[in-house]
Image (cartoon, rainbow, N blue to C red; front, side, top):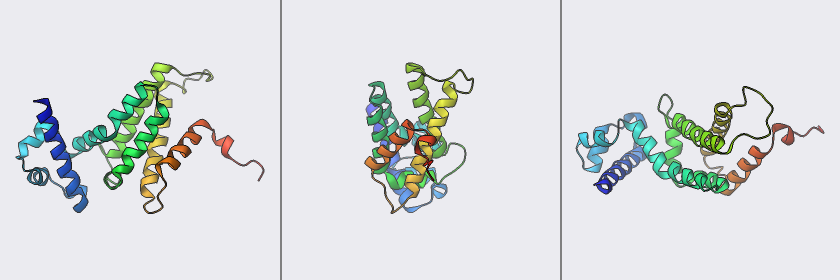
Length: 189
């Protein structure tokens, strides 16, 4: 039964992604999605609350679940690379969805899910060698890094034809998170 439920969700997701290639997000209706999938409208609501919930499920299935698994095995670099690779594989979808703004948008989901992953990592491993400062807590630090990573992803996707490879982006991100702005600035100018 669970397998059938997953297949139905995947069918709905594929139908939505196919429609998104031809229509703007706000013009796609639940009826259009279910007609494309050959399902009745209530079937959609048996699985998802709305289109935003569907987008979050796609992001979770495509990327978050595997990133989470890699992080649980201490494979942080692989997790970041998988995040970039997963987004790159479905680049048109994610670029289009990141243009949708507002509550429950992919941008908001991306930040929230990254923040959850960072928060869990920090909570499990702790924060080391930081001065006693009430701002440098798990919530602040995880939000800081989540926003930075989300912004990097958005800028990368907005680059269009000036495509930076997954390897280049991974290398740049790893450099930025291991160096402060003061390490990067050329003081000799």
